[in-house]
Image (tube, rainbow, N blue to C red; front, side, top):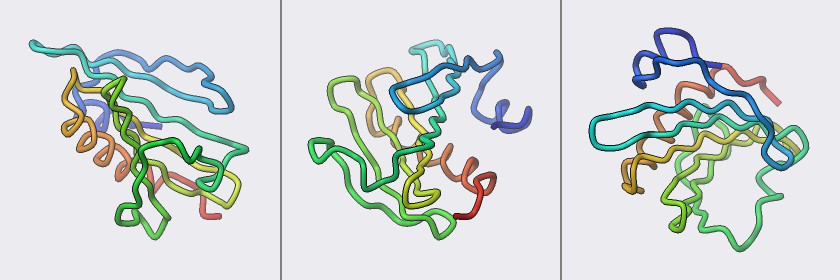
Length: 124
């Protein structure tokens, strides 16, 4: 999902790990820094659109990316932030970041990652 140049931009030096998370397929990268470790995820939901997000999530609409409906979700407990983009009505992609315990930095990183991933997504 990320080219070598894009991985280098985010400080990624190791191969991502693929796994499943609920109904999503994800790739996870860890970036070890001097002060903290950052975790970056790209999660593809093949059968869950934005409308399927739980009402209990701390979510807010943000400016669209590439004309896609986009929602930010902050998890104050796990100190991470996700940017969710609609691919179709029934599919979505999420970019998620954890940057130490800095939720604001995590949101910046998730948004930057979303802007890199969006052009690679199919048009619904």
